[in-house]
Image 1 (tube, one colour):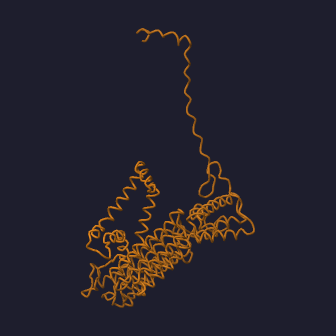
Image 2: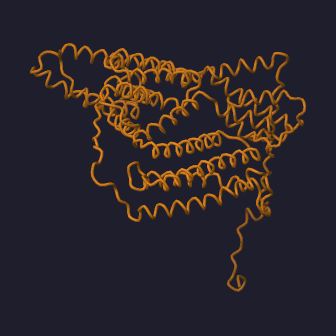
Length: 537
């Protein structure tokens, strides 16, 4: 048994060392992170699956493993933080699910993942301190072995810092065959430690035990001021207030009636979008607290009908918020954050519907949490596959005022900020023949900056499949010709929108002091006569 455990530990240590070497070769040597992150994710998943036999005996772990492999696809295509977090979540759940009795609900798993990530920071070092040989446990060297990792690792770290700070120590170590300890070497060592700690968390996961709360079997929770009568009156008042707000939205927002004097559509749309979402969230919270399944208030038919009517009004309120945001986008422009806001509003509406369904069907709180978490997970998966920046760039260019659209003037600074996501749209815009010369020159400059930046990234460690496809698409767009040469930078350079910057104002010349007349030869040779007191006065 001890030999088997020891061989498993050694195999995982070798796998961790191999993953550290792979990460060094993929990320540190080429100095960048690109589609190589997807390759590392696949290798990490394969090593964890190969060295964790319990995963193969749990069907829940199969689903998590499938999710990790699926999320390696966006990491191969265009890696991002969202895809990386979701991949780590699936991979971690893959190794933790066999250690849990059941799934319970997503809220407890969020807490479990946080605790796992925290305790895993000390996982490798804790395992090193507990290290024992398979034989000879009582030998002196086996009792001393657990004491060595901390002083050896800590001493090596301090020695590297001293070698970096003191050239005498650094040269002496280099002469005896040690590598040079400079800032890059120290950074590389820290990088190795970070990768080793991260992969060790799934190769040898820490056991995380959360307290189990039994469902309450006593009297229902009573809140101050919450009774059947108060809930009924509150729902009547809430429905009236929401009817007024929804009526105004119907009159001005949905029907297109003229707004009162001094109020623009952009004002009406922008000011109300986010406060109304907060209103809907508060409404959902009220239903969760005051009308829990099995409570006395939720059992009264009149209250249940009023709740359904009120939630329906809230869903319409969210739809109005979405329309407000769409109207605001049409007047101004589309951004990735505004797309995310529209998605968030749709999730809020779905959450409200799920709250009512829970009340009507008597579902548990765990069901509600898992249903909302599942919807959010599907949305996040879609966002990792899509390129919201490319969608924003294409929409803004298609509706820009400069090309005859009804939108705002094109924000070239935002397109420059989007980088490669805006390249194909910028090239398509540049190939148009109806652009004004000044605007066409600014577009050409922004396109040139984005293209040069992307080519530099593709030639180094930041290469991605998505940018490779973009370059092929640009070449196909230019099959019948080529892009004009990049405009000149100008004497003072160009701004983020490609416009020439004004030359700096000339500095004012310093004031000229009056020249002091040079002394004559006689004054230089003959001493000046001393003045008497009377003459001085």
